[in-house]
Amino acid sequence: MPDMSAGRAPAGPVAPPRSARSGVALSGPSSPRRREGEPSPSVCVLEGHAFASWAAGHRAGEHAGALPFGVDALERAGYSVAHADAVWRGGRARAWARERSRPLGYQLRADGAVAQVLTSLGPLRRSAACVSLFEDQGLAYCGLRRIAGAHLPPLVMVSCWLGQRLVDGDERRRRAYRVLAREASLVTVFSRNQLRLLAEALELPVERLVAIDFGVDTDFYRPGPAAAEPYVAVVGKDAGRDWPTLLAAASLTPAVRYVLATDPARLASLAVPSNVTVLGMLGHREYRALVGGSMFSVVPTRELAYPTGQSVLLESLACGRPVVAARTGAMQDYLVAEATAGYDVGDADGLAVAIGALAGDEERRRAMSAAARRAALDRFDSRIMWRRIGALIDQVLDDPVLDDPVLDDPVLDDRAPPTGRTARARGERRAGAARG
Image 1 (cartoon, rainbow, N blue to C red):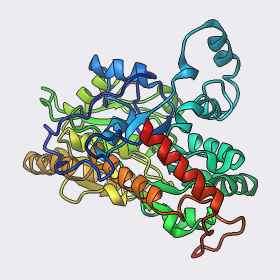
Image 2 (spheres, one colour):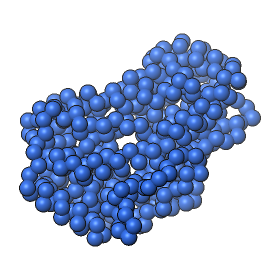
Image 3 (cartoon, rainbow, N blue to C red):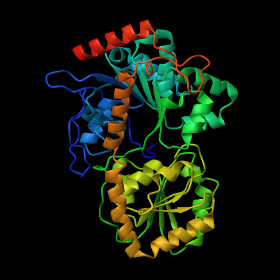
Image 4 (cartoon, rainbow, N blue to C red):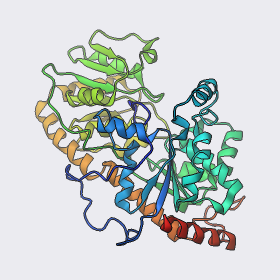
């Protein structure tokens, strides 16, 4: 997910969908659910930013997306977006609670996942479906749904780090995730390598797991002028970055200038070569300028279950910049042959060769740059991602089986039959959502 995300963000009306001026094909009817003269069904989005302040920041040009991750594009899929910002509102009591709860895990903090879910009960009750970004909010909602059952709408849980948490966690954590995740109607992942992992670890039917491509804001991240002095951009702060391999490769390519934006604490124990300039964390505009002004980006990552580094890779492509990236299992879905160059994980010599070859071939970079922008528009635009998620919401609302929890001891090819209680509640939710 985005490494350089800026501040939290506002409630209030969702901005209208962005135009397709970037060339993204979004023609045709928005959704069979949006009919003339009828209100759009509401989808409650659980996400860890304040939408109101985010939208204000976007209007000021400070960061990408009218709403976080481009979720406003659900409007094009025929749904209105509902969200509660209560946990981020001002006031001494809320500020005190946020500060005092900071040592707690993200789930239990005063502005954490559980609080976000509980303060969203109003829009949840008025919505036909719920979408969570990401598994923290989704699993918190699953816990609530286990209590409230069919009185709350079905969940499409968009997961990001869940696969790695299942790998790293002990059996107690995996068991807790397994119980909670059964309440989700569908769980999405951002790489196909995670499908089998989640199916086995969570004991979910395979039809409840879907791999989708991550998407970025190709209007905000767009080609810009190259810097007068050539350099290679390297950006990232998450635990999946492989800084030792990157710095070793930099020492092997002394003629190449690197500009590295990360939390300096990540490099505290490492020797930084003289051809590497280290910046701190950047806002969205500064980050865009760094990537857009480069010859190309490098995304050095370790082997993890999820595609760590995908945001920087895709935002670089959107800026029309080639990318050199590690060939991890999860990143295979994003390594566009015409626009990226790969190297084996942990191979500093191989990374140095890939960087040196691309830095010394301007004609190749030019061809890769054009292919990079095309790939971002044709496949990795956030509006395409949300069109896909909108279709999954349609699927959940149309399939009575997907709107029921999985059996306590599920078999992968077996699903729980619908119950009368769930069917009645589903009808009531739809009727209430249509009334607005």
